[in-house]
Length: 47
Image 1 (cartoon, helix red, strand yellow):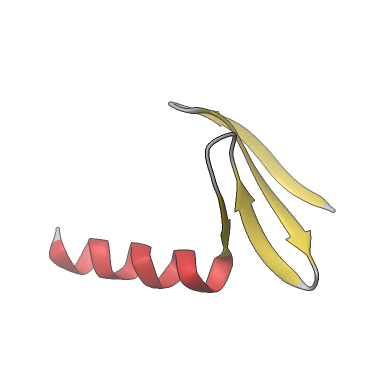
Image 2 (image 1 turned 180 degrees about the vertical axis):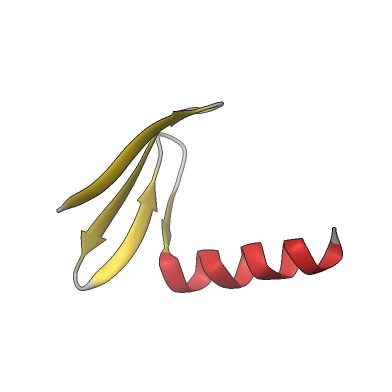
């Protein structure tokens, strides 16, 4: 089920519920919320 859609620098980004998990989809990649959240949190700590 689609939660939100936005157009970003790389095209359409979509947040979806898939198999009970939030997933961020784009034309180039798909990322589950748990992994994505950990990566973004680490990047923000470095910057």
